[in-house]
Image 1: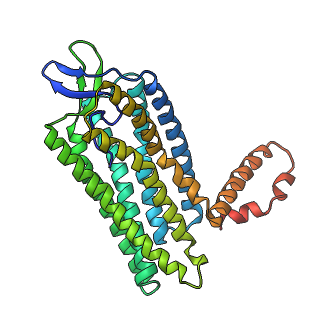
Image 2 (image 1 turned 135 degrees about the vertical axis):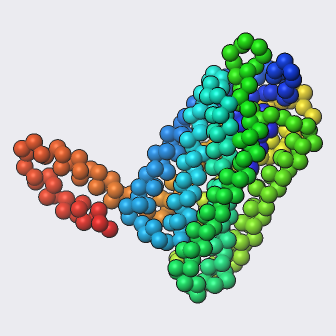
Length: 343
């Protein structure tokens, strides 16, 4: 979804490779790299803590054999895979690429795998909800649903990994100039025609096509819910819809900026203006992995599980604090703590 454009995954303004090394065509906008790096690290902390907490709640309190929870676990994994690459990009923005050519290829591959797999999983979740709400409803056996869900998740990972191979292989770590000691990690640009073809295929197959499928499916789901007499049962559908919408809201401006940069002839001044917009849209896009944990908490059951988890941790700290000869009255005041652990 996010192609290796002429700014590269991190927006450094390189355009062509020559025998003498990279040639700088325009001056960078000063300060944006440091701001971007700070946001990358902030997103990393929020995403790891938020998605990690959701994963703990999910494994502690939720039924892991529910189809929705199967999708959520894999979505958490894809978001965390994407998130784990952000500190490396932050270091790259602050200094230069210092993780070698293999690190450049692997981290670029992991970056795109996380994005592509998330989109494939969201599409599969949408299609699954369309089938269960609009077509079959409760007629499909739960065991068969679970098998289909796992098959869809595996297919999403295979698609995401395969689609990212080209991005990983084409990315190289290369020294700027001779003897400068400054390296970059960027896509090795080919001809303009091949670059444009690869970009349009990525956007068409890995962004626009899933978007069209999701819009059509949720349009049918919405019509079904509106004519249903029992709407409260579709709260999960609403949460999943918000997750899908937030993903596209975060990533659409980023892809639009890259699309405009690819088709427009820009001078240095215009490129600098686009780079500012690009940096802002990129931060918003990367921040999508922090949104899902907040959306999960929209469900009352998740909020209850979260509170139970906090009470459990508080109870354990209280128990450790009373082991030094103090009375156990602090623990006996909260008999519900142990009961909530087994919910």
